[in-house]
Image 1 (cartoon, rainbow, N blue to C red):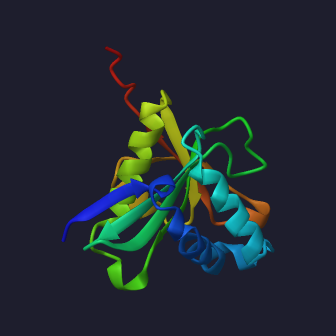
Image 2: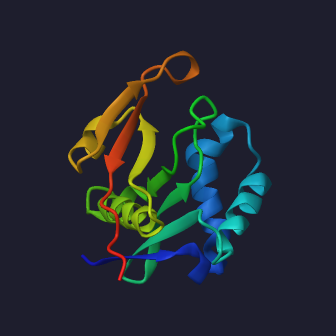
Length: 158
C-alpha cells in the first residue's frame, strides 16, 4: 500500500472533507462550528503560509490529515511549531498512513528551518516509537495529556 502525502493547497476541493474530519474528531468538543473550521482550513491554501495542512492519499483517495501550525496550546505560547490534528480514516488505520503524515509534517517543519516540533496527546507510545520524547505532563483541562517534542535536523543549505 503506497501512501502519498501532499499539501492541501494543491487540493483546495478537499477543504470541506478535511474540515469535516477535524470537526468530527475535535471541533465539537472545542465548541467550534463546522463553518469556523472550514474558514480556518481555507487559510492553509496560501502557498506563502508557514502553517500547512497535509493530506494523505492511498490509491488516489484522501484518507488522512495532519497540520503544521504555529501554536496549539494557549498555555504554552513559547513552544512552536506544532504537529496537530493527525487524523486517519478508521478503515485506513494501522496501515502506515499516520506515520507517513507525521514524517511529512516533520519534514515540512525541518524545511522551514525549525530545530524541533511539538505535539500534545494522551497516546504517547505511538509517537515515542517514532522518536518523539515526553517533555511535560499536562494538568487541569488537559489532564492525562503530554507535550512531546521531536528534535529535527536542520536542512543543509547549499
